[in-house]
Image (tube, rainbow, N blue to C red; front, top):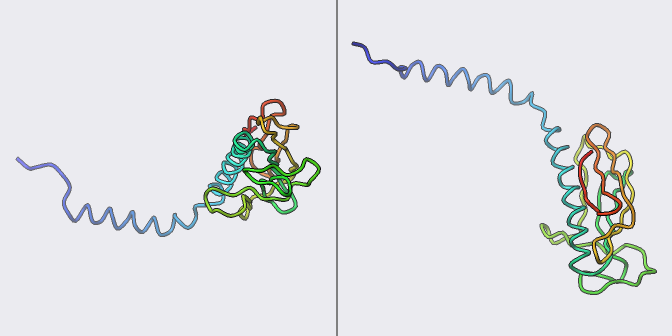
Length: 155
């Protein structure tokens, strides 16, 4: 009676064939789709972070989606920060600190991602937005921030 199974030669041959295929197939995979998806998720997280930061600090926080620069930034009013609100007459120029990098909270789109229209939404100290915002992407689902609740989601 013969034992069933694969010989070492058969296993090595299969591994060599799979390795050779991987050399030709992996470069053809397009990572841009992953980059576009990841950027949209970062923008959604930024919108939620802006709302929660406004509620935690009691200060207004602006989310600015810049279509010309393909970027999203979070800002306090000039002269303000997370402990002291800037005067309501000041412009939104003081950057919110990014908890991941300790620098300004600015998301720059990777290559292949194009924001076709953006705008601003300001969350007050209660987390309520001053208006709704639709961030349009050239080839991907858009992101909407609801006018009444501030809920951010893909559409």
